[in-house]
Image (cartoon, rainbow, N blue to C red; front, side):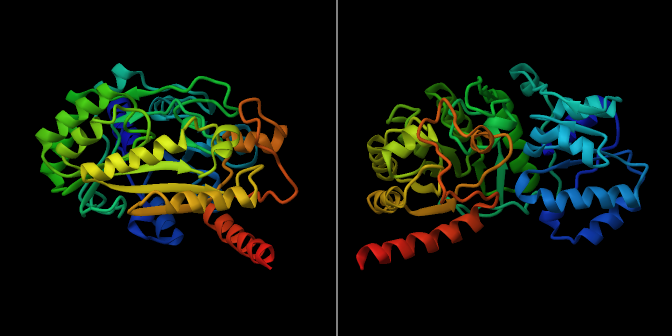
Length: 393
């Protein structure tokens, strides 16, 4: 949304106000009072299904309190644009990345606005995303180990070519691929753009670490080499979201030498069949284990992410993940239930019952459908524990 804010301001000449109520920890009543006292022509809301029940109620309240304000809905939830437009007082619903789509809505286009993403040249000519003193220091992720506040969250690229069944952003925002059969785009910012942006951020807000929250930071040797050169000049510690198998092994040491203190890596499962036939991640788990050793030897921390309760996954396969985790020597890890978000192949499976690229994904009788990964993980933990006790008995 920060990228869309500055882009819309430049392209429309309008006055843009950025507000993140979660960062401010404000109530709905406080937010409504803020909107009511401002003569906003448009309100842009980004949402996804885990928060959509709350956000749709908020849209109704904004409309009731400020009927002159046109509401633009963006984010993964816009994959359900037709339903949203038919049920809610929404002026426009922008699918995919929404810099251009918001401008089109402000210029008078209403209804469903289809994918209209920035080209690489447009990305690198765009204004830097919105930051100000109120919000700059309010974002923080304690992982991977070594993170220090204040911390800047930024992108050096957009998109990911891999097609994990549950992954939301590449399926709904940087591409339109709800069944895993389409093309997914990857666009990387230039070294020149990133260097100017990061130097400005550090100078203005005194950030002590930077986290690259790309879909996948290390897609290809050239991008990593360029970003390492940039970070050597910027001169502060950094971390990134990575894959285990997309760069030459020696580049992990180059990342460390340029200031990288840690990485996050998505493993998803510790069972190779689940990885290949259900997730469709195209990751060799043995190679991924070896990569963790290389990263640790280089002096960086590793945070691993795992998900449970995939369609067709058995309890024994979930326990394989537990066993696999024990062999990795991770510094920190995240375990969650596999959430089902609109616009993803996982959501499509619930409608189509089968997916060509996910041959092992099946909606069994005990499959748990849930939009909230934490709720699902809590439910699965109980099931796994009960079944484990029965097996031992």
